[in-house]
Every structure is written in C-alpha cells, then in structure tokens.
Amino acid sequence: MSQPLPERAADTSAEQPWPVRHLSMKIVAYVDKMSSLWVEGQVVQVNRRGNTAYLVVRDPEVDMSLTANISIHALNAMPTPLIEGARVVLQAKPSFWPKRGTLSLDARQIRPVGIGDLLARIEVLKQRLAQEGLFDRERKRPLPFLPRTVGLITGRESAAEKDVVENARRRWPSVQFVIREVAVQGSNTVLEVTEALRELDADNSIDVIIIARGGGSAEELLPFSNETLLRAVSEAVTPVVSAIGHDVDQPLLDLVADWRASTPTDAGKRVVPDAAEERARIEQLASRAGRALIGRLGHERHVIASLRSRPVMADPTALVVRHREQVSALRSRGTERLLGRLRRAHDQVGHLATQVRALSPQSTLERGYAVVQHADGRLVTDQAELEPAELLRVRVAHGDFGVRTVGGAS
Image (tube, rainbow, N blue to C red; front, side, top):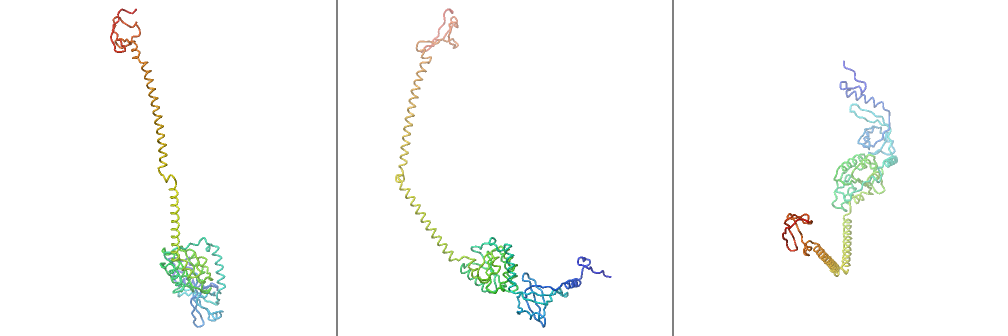
C-alpha cells in the first residue's frame, strides 16, 4: 500500500516528493482561491477568434507577459479601438492551466489608460527621481572634448541616425561610431534601449553614448520616461546624451542624461568639435603667440640697447681702470708702510746689538779685565779657594794662559 502524499509543500522530502500532476493541482487550487483583480499592462498582441479575443499583455518595465482572454463585446465597448502597444487595465480572474503549466487571465472588463493618466504618473515619477538627486547638476559628467568612439542608440534605418552621423562627421570627419539599432517605439523599446546602453557602457573604447529618436507624439515618447531606462542611464559610467524628439519634447531622459540635445542634429554637433573652428582657433593662437614673441624680442632689444648706451658700456675698461688705480695706490701705501716698519725694526735690532755688545763679557775683557778659572773650569771668586802652587787658567780679551799661585792664602 503506497504512503499518502504530504499535505503541505513544506512536508515534502526527497523520499516523499510531490508528482508534477499533484503540484499542478495544488497551484490550480491556490490560483482558484484568488479573487478578481485589476492589472495594468501593455498590449503587444491582439488575436480575435469568434466571440473571444486573446491578448498578450506585457509589463513594460521587464520582459514578462501574460495571456488574457476577453469577450469581443467587452473589447468593442472600448471608447477607441484597441491597438497593439496601448496601455490598458484589465479586471480579470487568474487561472492556471495544469497541462501546460501556464498562467493566464480571464478578463471581464478592459479600459484604456489615457495619456493624461500616463503623464500624471510620469509627473509623480519625476518628483520622486528629483528627490533622489538623479537630476542634480553635480552628478552630470562632462562630455569629452574629442571622443575616440561615439556610441549611438537609435531606430533601425532612422532619420535620427543619419542626422547624428552626418552632422558629426561634417564637423570632424574622422569620428568613429558604434551604432546599435533598436526599437524606439512600441512595447520592446525600454528593453532594447536599456540592453544596448549597458552593452555600449561596458565597452571601454566608447567615450560618449547618444540615445536618439526623431519626433513623435507624447504617447510614442513615453518609453523614454520609463523608470527602468532612467535608472540604467543614471548608473552608466560613460556620459550619455539625450536626443529625443524636438526641442519642445522633454521626456525624463533629458533630465537624467548628462547633456540634453534639442534634436538628433544638435547631438551630432555637440559630441565632437568643429575641425574648421579648431583650426581657425589654432591659427589665431599661433598668430597671437607670434605677435607676443615679436613684442618680447623688441622689448629685450630695447633693454640691451639701453644698457649698451651707459658710459660703462661705452668704455668697458673705465671701471677696471678706476679699480686698477685704487689697487696700485693701496699697493704703494702698503709697500711704504712695510718698508718703514722694516727700517724701524732694523734700527731697533742695531740698538739692541750695541747693548748686547756693551754688556757682553768680551767687552769687559777688552777693558782689561780677566777671568780666572780652576783647572776644572770653576771660576775663582775668592782667594781663600786657592791652593798653594795651584795651576789656574786666565782668560783675557785676546786668548788665555796658565799661572800658578805662590804662597798661601793671607
């Protein structure tokens, strides 16, 4: 006997799983409990079969859609015919088809979302994004002076693409473009533009990105006020230029982008400089620099002439001669003073020599005095020191001789 299946999803396990049919029936039961609700979406496909119309309703914010069926009579009761791309609200009961595992809507009423309602929602979104600072001037990134490559997001074979590329290359012929052709109208606009933006933003060779579209009705330009696209632009690292519609059109993309072009033509003129203007500016600067250089040379030439006209420059040796005379005079004075001091020193030396000679023992001897010494060289200063017959040495002014004492000390 097989075991009963778990009652709740939380009670399932690898040993006691739910079969797919059981899970499908559980979903059917859960969806059937849901009450009718109002849901909003964008109609991307309408198929009429007999008395029933089948709609594919898509969420414009993400790539997600549901199928809804509704009575032809309810469809015909709308104030204007339903067309693909229209925004609608449906009163519907969700239903789940277990065989295919698909969720659908059984619609009972359908109402168009008027342009007034959409614009009112955009105004609310505008105020919210402004409070978050997405429109602040401080967060705007400057456009490069001369981008290496320009990324262009525009419609397929559109006039906007031609306007941007031709006007940019007319100003700077060598500018390079990486072009992404996407839907710029309809249900896929937000998805395709956002994906192209992120792809170009990830390319490091692209320095600026232009999102361009020609003019259109307010409803046709609604995708460029979509919150998903606006946040993608605000998160981009590469500067973004908005070139949507004409000057009177102002989707919210204009406020989030780093620079707003009034038209695609204006965007082509803005992203690159004008080669002719830059060449003229260079020539003008070169001319100003040449005139400034000539003026500076003339000024310096005048300064040199003024310096050369001075007396010292007329006779460059005059200053040297004056200093030479001063040096010669100083040398003469120094020589005279040195010679005077030498003469005085010479006289002083002669005077001292005379004094030395007058006081020397030799001078005393020349006056008749003699020096008597014992044999061992001691001077005889006292008669009592003499021994009888002692040999003494007597020095006189010119020579010496020996003598012997006679007798004894008295």
